[in-house]
Image (cartoon, rainbow, N blue to C red):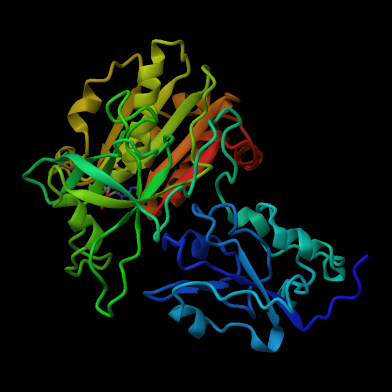
Length: 433
Ligand code: A2P
């Protein structure tokens, strides 16, 4: 039996700067703003984190699931964490004695997040007894934290920032009209004889060469894989990425995106440092009668292309589920993969395009296209084997959830109940940025 736990020893939640790919998922997921970042690191405020674990499952790399037992008075401040290149070692004298901080007391069990050793040890302390849910709790996590039941098992984190794998560029071409501002590239990377097993919906990290202004190595940037598990070319150990050259920030100010420009300028034969693969929930179902409802904008098409192509290859082997796609772009010329998409048979995929800036035409978003196809979307929502994937601009997430609610309501479905069920069953996957 354990003796009483001294409350002044804190089990401090930390993020491993060596593994973290700075994707912002944890900061977006945290229901109480305990996570913040600077240009160097993502960090956790010791006096705010309540150990609700909501951030643990969504983290694609597992960098988030790190804990150190420290004297409460000596908890690592965010200012110190910002400077770290690696996590501090655990003080052996304190190891195993920590409890999750005061902010956590009374809040354990509020989250639907994944179990971790820290969660388990917190649950074994007295502080967990008077459980009061975090306001909103895990409901703030809007999509599934689990994969579809029939998803294949992914490999994750085979290669890290310290031990990347080298891939060779075997193709790099533009997939948007040359006359448009959106310079989106389809880049094919070959891994040769080195193992790099992936699934549709996973992502990889690319480490751009060179250093930041203060002399640090660049952090990896995360890109969704655009090709199926058996290769961009079936049977080859390669994969494709869909990369938009970043030339402006969100405010429209001119900036040169370090990694996107590096990638878009690569030539055949160039060698790239790769981390990953990442992601264990945004995965496709593998049972033959599962339906895919895919909603994306711009480069958010990458995982949809991967899943669609896998289904196309499998179609001959008996996959019978429906595929319905809603795809938004500014204009037809700015929609990546427009040509190949148009060539897919109509009885294989039901494609709906939405253009927001076609001259002389009203602005049209994916939500508008979904509204127009409400009866068919509702039919999919009614089906227990429908899996929804949303990928692209952050702004569309609210709009898409809103239109799903409206379509469900008009069809006599209780969206709140359906939403919870789809989340729990790994049938609602959101990846927006
Ligand atoms: P908009 O013309 O309003 O920017 P981008 O080319 O910037 O990646 O955007 C892809 C598409 O997503 C564009 O058509 C863009 O329209 C559209 N979009 C922007 N905001 C939203 C939103 N909140 N919901 C759905 N689509 C959006």
